[in-house]
Image 1 (cartoon, rainbow, N blue to C red):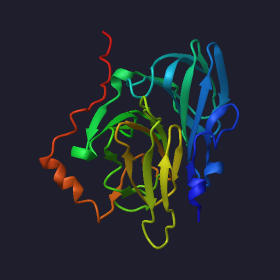
Image 2: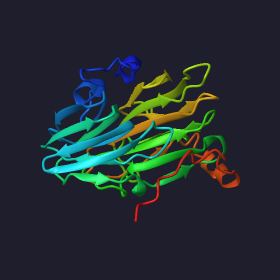
Image 3: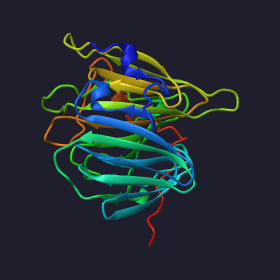
Length: 296
Protein backbone atom coordinates (compact mmCIF):
# COMPACT_ATOMS: atom_id res chain seq x y z
CA UNK A 1 0.00 0.00 0.00
CA UNK A 2 1.60 3.32 -1.01
CA UNK A 3 1.56 5.90 1.76
CA UNK A 4 0.07 9.36 1.16
CA UNK A 5 3.51 10.88 1.72
CA UNK A 6 4.98 8.79 -1.12
CA UNK A 7 2.28 9.98 -3.52
CA UNK A 8 2.31 13.72 -2.69
CA UNK A 9 5.75 15.08 -3.52
CA UNK A 10 6.19 18.70 -2.37
CA UNK A 11 8.27 20.97 -4.59
CA UNK A 12 11.94 19.98 -4.46
CA UNK A 13 11.39 16.73 -2.57
CA UNK A 14 11.82 14.59 -5.70
CA UNK A 15 14.81 16.54 -7.03
CA UNK A 16 17.67 14.50 -8.50
CA UNK A 17 20.46 16.67 -9.93
CA UNK A 18 20.17 18.32 -12.41
CA UNK A 19 16.37 17.97 -12.25
CA UNK A 20 14.21 19.94 -9.82
CA UNK A 21 11.48 17.30 -10.25
CA UNK A 22 12.29 13.69 -11.03
CA UNK A 23 9.71 10.92 -11.22
CA UNK A 24 10.43 7.68 -13.05
CA UNK A 25 8.93 4.19 -12.86
CA UNK A 26 11.42 3.11 -10.20
CA UNK A 27 10.85 6.07 -7.86
CA UNK A 28 7.08 5.98 -8.42
CA UNK A 29 6.81 2.23 -7.89
CA UNK A 30 5.12 1.58 -11.22
CA UNK A 31 6.04 0.66 -14.79
CA UNK A 32 5.53 3.33 -17.46
CA UNK A 33 5.11 7.05 -16.66
CA UNK A 34 7.90 9.59 -16.04
CA UNK A 35 8.29 13.33 -15.49
CA UNK A 36 11.40 15.45 -15.18
CA UNK A 37 11.63 19.23 -14.83
CA UNK A 38 14.88 21.04 -15.47
CA UNK A 39 15.79 24.70 -15.02
CA UNK A 40 18.43 26.06 -17.38
CA UNK A 41 20.34 29.31 -17.01
CA UNK A 42 20.99 31.45 -20.08
CA UNK A 43 23.32 29.67 -22.48
CA UNK A 44 23.08 26.38 -20.57
CA UNK A 45 22.23 23.03 -22.13
CA UNK A 46 21.24 19.60 -20.89
CA UNK A 47 21.99 16.33 -22.64
CA UNK A 48 20.19 13.07 -21.85
CA UNK A 49 19.67 9.56 -23.16
CA UNK A 50 16.02 8.69 -23.79
CA UNK A 51 16.55 5.01 -22.93
CA UNK A 52 13.43 2.83 -23.10
CA UNK A 53 11.12 5.85 -23.04
CA UNK A 54 9.74 8.36 -25.53
CA UNK A 55 9.69 11.99 -24.36
CA UNK A 56 8.02 15.31 -25.09
CA UNK A 57 10.09 18.37 -24.19
CA UNK A 58 7.62 21.08 -23.15
CA UNK A 59 8.63 24.63 -22.18
CA UNK A 60 7.00 25.73 -18.93
CA UNK A 61 8.78 29.07 -19.22
CA UNK A 62 11.33 30.32 -21.71
CA UNK A 63 12.45 29.08 -25.11
CA UNK A 64 14.88 26.39 -26.20
CA UNK A 65 16.51 24.48 -29.00
CA UNK A 66 16.05 20.70 -28.91
CA UNK A 67 18.43 18.52 -30.89
CA UNK A 68 17.93 14.79 -31.34
CA UNK A 69 20.16 12.76 -33.61
CA UNK A 70 20.20 14.75 -36.89
CA UNK A 71 17.09 16.82 -36.10
CA UNK A 72 16.95 20.29 -34.52
CA UNK A 73 13.79 22.07 -33.32
CA UNK A 74 13.45 25.70 -32.22
CA UNK A 75 10.87 26.04 -29.43
CA UNK A 76 9.51 29.58 -29.02
CA UNK A 77 8.05 28.57 -25.66
CA UNK A 78 6.19 31.07 -23.47
CA UNK A 79 6.57 33.42 -20.53
CA UNK A 80 4.83 30.97 -18.18
CA UNK A 81 2.07 28.36 -18.17
CA UNK A 82 -0.64 30.98 -17.49
CA UNK A 83 0.27 33.13 -20.51
CA UNK A 84 -0.03 30.90 -23.56
CA UNK A 85 0.11 27.59 -25.37
CA UNK A 86 3.62 26.32 -26.07
CA UNK A 87 5.20 24.46 -28.93
CA UNK A 88 7.13 21.30 -28.04
CA UNK A 89 9.45 18.59 -29.34
CA UNK A 90 9.02 14.82 -29.38
CA UNK A 91 12.16 12.69 -29.00
CA UNK A 92 12.01 8.90 -29.40
CA UNK A 93 13.37 6.07 -27.31
CA UNK A 94 16.96 4.86 -27.80
CA UNK A 95 18.17 8.34 -28.75
CA UNK A 96 20.37 11.14 -27.45
CA UNK A 97 18.75 14.55 -26.95
CA UNK A 98 20.08 18.01 -26.07
CA UNK A 99 17.98 20.88 -24.69
CA UNK A 100 19.64 24.30 -24.86
CA UNK A 101 18.20 27.66 -23.77
CA UNK A 102 19.92 30.90 -24.79
CA UNK A 103 17.93 33.03 -22.32
CA UNK A 104 17.15 30.42 -19.68
CA UNK A 105 13.91 28.75 -18.71
CA UNK A 106 12.15 25.81 -17.11
CA UNK A 107 11.32 22.73 -19.16
CA UNK A 108 9.23 19.62 -18.53
CA UNK A 109 10.26 16.25 -19.94
CA UNK A 110 7.17 14.05 -20.04
CA UNK A 111 8.02 10.42 -20.67
CA UNK A 112 6.63 6.92 -21.08
CA UNK A 113 8.22 3.54 -21.54
CA UNK A 114 7.30 2.30 -24.99
CA UNK A 115 8.04 -0.26 -27.68
CA UNK A 116 8.20 1.58 -31.00
CA UNK A 117 10.88 4.08 -31.98
CA UNK A 118 9.00 6.84 -33.80
CA UNK A 119 10.72 9.77 -35.57
CA UNK A 120 11.68 12.92 -33.69
CA UNK A 121 9.19 15.70 -34.46
CA UNK A 122 8.20 19.30 -33.78
CA UNK A 123 4.78 20.11 -32.33
CA UNK A 124 3.68 23.67 -33.20
CA UNK A 125 1.61 25.61 -30.65
CA UNK A 126 -0.83 26.50 -33.44
CA UNK A 127 -1.80 22.82 -33.73
CA UNK A 128 -2.61 22.35 -30.03
CA UNK A 129 -6.39 21.97 -29.54
CA UNK A 130 -7.62 24.13 -26.65
CA UNK A 131 -10.71 22.50 -25.15
CA UNK A 132 -13.14 24.04 -22.67
CA UNK A 133 -14.45 21.28 -20.46
CA UNK A 134 -17.24 21.32 -17.87
CA UNK A 135 -19.43 24.31 -16.98
CA UNK A 136 -20.09 26.70 -14.12
CA UNK A 137 -17.66 26.18 -11.24
CA UNK A 138 -16.48 22.96 -12.88
CA UNK A 139 -15.22 24.87 -15.95
CA UNK A 140 -11.60 24.36 -16.98
CA UNK A 141 -9.34 24.62 -20.00
CA UNK A 142 -7.43 21.67 -21.44
CA UNK A 143 -4.46 22.13 -23.78
CA UNK A 144 -4.38 18.79 -25.60
CA UNK A 145 -0.82 18.99 -26.91
CA UNK A 146 0.01 15.31 -26.37
CA UNK A 147 -3.46 13.77 -26.24
CA UNK A 148 -4.29 10.50 -27.93
CA UNK A 149 -5.73 11.24 -31.36
CA UNK A 150 -4.02 14.65 -31.48
CA UNK A 151 -0.28 13.92 -31.55
CA UNK A 152 1.20 10.54 -32.42
CA UNK A 153 3.20 8.73 -29.77
CA UNK A 154 3.59 5.07 -28.91
CA UNK A 155 2.40 5.13 -25.28
CA UNK A 156 2.68 8.65 -23.87
CA UNK A 157 -0.41 10.81 -23.22
CA UNK A 158 0.15 14.34 -21.88
CA UNK A 159 -2.14 17.37 -21.50
CA UNK A 160 -2.26 20.65 -19.59
CA UNK A 161 -5.25 21.73 -17.50
CA UNK A 162 -5.94 25.30 -16.34
CA UNK A 163 -8.51 25.76 -13.58
CA UNK A 164 -9.73 29.31 -12.93
CA UNK A 165 -9.50 30.57 -9.35
CA UNK A 166 -12.27 29.12 -7.19
CA UNK A 167 -13.18 26.32 -9.64
CA UNK A 168 -12.96 22.53 -9.47
CA UNK A 169 -11.43 20.37 -12.19
CA UNK A 170 -10.82 16.62 -12.51
CA UNK A 171 -14.51 16.51 -11.65
CA UNK A 172 -16.50 14.35 -11.46
CA UNK A 173 -13.93 12.04 -9.85
CA UNK A 174 -12.92 9.35 -12.29
CA UNK A 175 -10.56 6.40 -12.60
CA UNK A 176 -8.56 4.45 -15.16
CA UNK A 177 -7.18 1.53 -13.19
CA UNK A 178 -9.09 -1.45 -14.66
CA UNK A 179 -8.70 -3.20 -18.00
CA UNK A 180 -12.34 -3.40 -19.07
CA UNK A 181 -14.63 -2.06 -21.81
CA UNK A 182 -14.68 1.74 -21.66
CA UNK A 183 -11.65 2.02 -19.39
CA UNK A 184 -7.87 1.79 -19.93
CA UNK A 185 -5.21 1.28 -17.27
CA UNK A 186 -3.07 4.42 -17.01
CA UNK A 187 -0.52 5.55 -14.43
CA UNK A 188 -0.90 9.31 -13.97
CA UNK A 189 1.29 12.15 -12.77
CA UNK A 190 -0.09 15.57 -11.77
CA UNK A 191 2.48 18.39 -11.76
CA UNK A 192 1.01 21.62 -10.32
CA UNK A 193 1.77 25.29 -10.69
CA UNK A 194 -0.29 27.82 -8.74
CA UNK A 195 -0.56 31.43 -9.90
CA UNK A 196 0.56 33.79 -7.12
CA UNK A 197 -1.14 36.98 -6.01
CA UNK A 198 0.36 40.14 -4.59
CA UNK A 199 -0.47 38.94 -1.08
CA UNK A 200 0.26 35.20 -1.10
CA UNK A 201 1.75 32.36 -3.18
CA UNK A 202 -1.52 30.39 -3.19
CA UNK A 203 -2.43 26.74 -2.70
CA UNK A 204 -4.82 24.17 -4.12
CA UNK A 205 -6.17 20.78 -3.09
CA UNK A 206 -6.24 17.41 -4.81
CA UNK A 207 -8.09 14.24 -3.84
CA UNK A 208 -7.43 10.57 -4.65
CA UNK A 209 -9.45 7.82 -2.96
CA UNK A 210 -9.95 4.04 -3.26
CA UNK A 211 -12.01 2.79 -6.20
CA UNK A 212 -12.77 -0.58 -4.62
CA UNK A 213 -11.85 -2.96 -1.80
CA UNK A 214 -8.73 -4.07 -3.66
CA UNK A 215 -7.51 -0.46 -4.02
CA UNK A 216 -5.89 1.46 -1.18
CA UNK A 217 -4.69 4.78 -2.62
CA UNK A 218 -6.02 7.55 -0.38
CA UNK A 219 -4.64 11.10 -0.59
CA UNK A 220 -5.95 14.55 0.25
CA UNK A 221 -3.08 16.87 -0.63
CA UNK A 222 -2.67 20.59 -0.12
CA UNK A 223 -0.70 21.30 -3.27
CA UNK A 224 1.58 24.28 -3.73
CA UNK A 225 3.52 25.60 -6.69
CA UNK A 226 5.55 22.82 -8.38
CA UNK A 227 4.20 19.99 -6.20
CA UNK A 228 3.52 16.55 -7.72
CA UNK A 229 0.80 14.01 -6.97
CA UNK A 230 1.09 10.44 -8.23
CA UNK A 231 -2.05 8.47 -9.11
CA UNK A 232 -1.29 4.75 -9.43
CA UNK A 233 -5.00 3.85 -9.14
CA UNK A 234 -8.25 4.99 -7.55
CA UNK A 235 -10.83 7.70 -8.08
CA UNK A 236 -9.08 11.04 -8.53
CA UNK A 237 -10.60 14.47 -8.30
CA UNK A 238 -11.50 17.09 -7.64
CA UNK A 239 -8.54 19.40 -8.10
CA UNK A 240 -9.59 22.57 -6.29
CA UNK A 241 -8.22 26.03 -7.09
CA UNK A 242 -8.17 28.54 -4.25
CA UNK A 243 -10.13 31.77 -4.88
CA UNK A 244 -7.71 34.39 -6.19
CA UNK A 245 -5.28 31.85 -7.63
CA UNK A 246 -5.55 30.05 -10.96
CA UNK A 247 -4.31 26.46 -10.93
CA UNK A 248 -2.31 24.70 -13.64
CA UNK A 249 -1.42 21.06 -13.82
CA UNK A 250 0.44 18.94 -16.33
CA UNK A 251 -0.91 15.39 -16.65
CA UNK A 252 1.41 12.60 -17.80
CA UNK A 253 -0.14 9.17 -18.45
CA UNK A 254 0.91 5.79 -19.82
CA UNK A 255 -0.04 2.18 -19.32
CA UNK A 256 0.06 -1.39 -20.58
CA UNK A 257 -2.77 -1.24 -23.12
CA UNK A 258 -1.72 -1.87 -26.75
CA UNK A 259 -4.17 0.91 -27.68
CA UNK A 260 -3.15 4.46 -26.73
CA UNK A 261 -6.45 5.76 -25.37
CA UNK A 262 -7.71 7.90 -22.48
CA UNK A 263 -10.70 5.88 -21.32
CA UNK A 264 -12.21 6.61 -17.91
CA UNK A 265 -15.06 5.69 -15.59
CA UNK A 266 -16.82 8.30 -13.45
CA UNK A 267 -17.49 7.67 -9.78
CA UNK A 268 -21.23 6.84 -9.97
CA UNK A 269 -21.84 8.92 -6.83
CA UNK A 270 -20.88 12.08 -8.74
CA UNK A 271 -21.25 11.34 -12.46
CA UNK A 272 -24.67 13.04 -12.50
CA UNK A 273 -22.91 16.42 -12.36
CA UNK A 274 -22.20 16.17 -16.10
CA UNK A 275 -25.92 16.44 -16.88
CA UNK A 276 -26.16 19.78 -15.05
CA UNK A 277 -23.56 21.33 -17.36
CA UNK A 278 -26.07 21.43 -20.21
CA UNK A 279 -27.95 24.23 -18.43
CA UNK A 280 -24.90 26.21 -17.27
CA UNK A 281 -22.56 28.48 -19.19
CA UNK A 282 -18.84 27.90 -19.28
CA UNK A 283 -16.95 30.21 -16.93
CA UNK A 284 -16.60 33.55 -18.75
CA UNK A 285 -12.92 33.76 -17.75
CA UNK A 286 -12.18 30.91 -20.16
CA UNK A 287 -10.26 30.43 -22.25
CA UNK A 288 -7.41 32.05 -20.35
CA UNK A 289 -5.72 32.08 -23.76
CA UNK A 290 -5.99 30.37 -27.13
CA UNK A 291 -3.47 28.72 -29.44
CA UNK A 292 -1.72 31.13 -31.83
CA UNK A 293 -2.70 31.19 -35.48
CA UNK A 294 -0.59 29.14 -37.81
CA UNK A 295 1.91 31.21 -39.80
CA UNK A 296 1.20 31.37 -43.51
